[in-house]
Image (cartoon, rainbow, N blue to C red; front, side, top):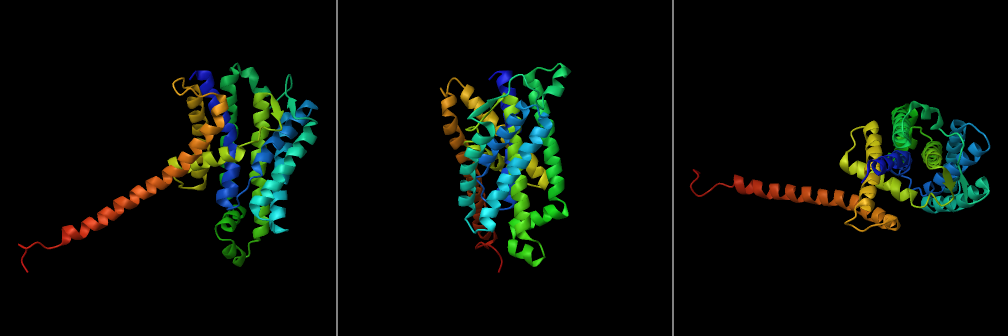
Length: 314
């Protein structure tokens, strides 16, 4: 695997770390299975790319992408909370609708970003090659988002959000409006995913309506891998674990596709994704089962060692 391919995998992993943050918020913090991310990712890319091609500042365009993603998350939350639609079905309905919305925003299936300013343009005068510049800029952005998100989740509003996902009945008993916190959490989750889509489009020079396929799987893989390798100690630590899991996931994909002995090609990406996610789900279970067997053996060995022998005094 060449250095350029390695840095390219790190770059994509850093962008998708924002998706992992969003998935962590919905699945782990709010306990809300949300498939909207497959639609909010290309929506963020579509909004940012369309505004940038119309001469809007790329930072303002990226912020508009966040608002669009947040609106998508709110739609899912409204369908679930206000109209009682099952959260999975509500998110599928929103995701399906967002395909058409993205097409409408772009005016077609894709928008190229050639010869236009992006969030990377102000840093291109530093003399760094693009394959170094992009990972550095995205690492700074991702770490900043992780710090801000951790600070928020440790605030009073963030604690209410966490309480809503952990025990909604107890949260309501303590005066927390669980509906309001769910709206907020879903908006924040999909806003982060849309930001990832906006950055991905600007880094790769295009936005495409199909670029969100499988986003939820990638986000879940990053969260699960991060939880497996770096068990949670605090909110910030968990977010950093999501970041590390996202980068490691992309590196594993990159190594697999660039290993000549395996004979894999880009068309095998979905297969590799399924295998890695499956391993990430299976390994923690195997680890728990092994620990349980060791504990049982230790318990059964203790009475044997304590039992008196025939030569012992009465």
